[in-house]
Image 1 (cartoon, one colour):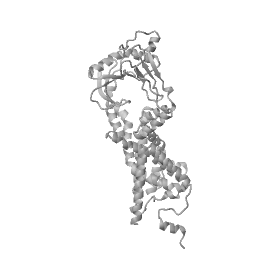
Image 2 (cartoon, helix red, strand yellow):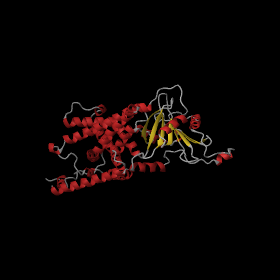
Image 3 (cartoon, one colour):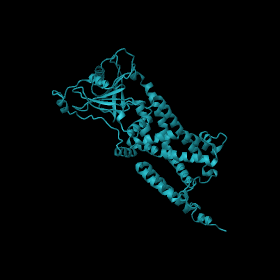
Image 4 (cartoon, one colour):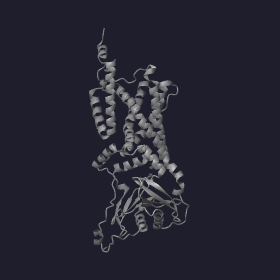
Length: 463
């Protein structure tokens, strides 16, 4: 006797014979298929991001070794005035315009003077390294971005972020970050679900099954390594998206809308009418108390090294003195100093940042390996190595269960039809919302669905 299920399979082989259910058993095939195909198609981008990220985690130590001569100086009992050190840098690059100076933060370190020099790449300045004890210039190097990356680290950073392809290269890293959390959470759900299905204890999920062989052994290693790495992988995905091109812009809009944007100290020209009201009538806007006085005033407010003093951008604008210690506990207080009078024109304390701004700052610094120094860099390297391992094991599983070995099609189409509408509709809505805020993920997901649909139609026509 032919059953209804037999007739249904004959009419539509992809359609499941059972009614729609709002259970994990119904949802699991859909998650499996998404995890499998996203892993296969997005994994090359993730592999490049993880490999270059592993190299970047080591770049801070590489930088210290490669540029040891420029970064260090003989320990001296006394230091020259900061103005004399700046003068030495100016004499080395007379065509440059001083933009900032970072006084030696501790004995044995050099002072870094930053200058704008013609024909340098965007966001790049020339750094002159001065011995604070003698005023001797120990070298000049290009310095990139707010982190002050020197050439080796800047090269590795650009490789990780853009593959040295300019703005188009940012698409690869954003695509990787957009999908990384989806693949990680899907894999976590699938691996944990095996605990109840196979009766495995937590220890059996944290450690691979050494008695297993073949595909089961690979899966055991893949799941165990993924469980150890999942929190770090999710962190890298979230923080990486904050400064991506398209998703990052959406995140910035959200932060601004909720009042979570990072505050900034004003560098606009100072209104000296307030000084006149206080009795300071003879303010010469062209006068400058000098960098030594500026440093003295800033440290008098409690700022401590390492510091960066930024030169006024235009006449009447203040010097901005800011702490640049991004290691925990973070020191990022700032003050604005009036060059004409030496008075404090404004102050911004890190303690007054909105919590979301603090979390963003800490997240980015931890992603870059700055927040906890060497320990942070070692952890990042371990996460990157774990991600590389997961990708390699994932491809190995794909190869082990390829159709030519008799396994058949591992994750058949149509699994979504077994999911109850009460579950499927919110998931579809969530996918649309996420695709809007993470546009590269949304576009790529739509492409995946179109390709999968076309392949399904072809198989039915040829079947």
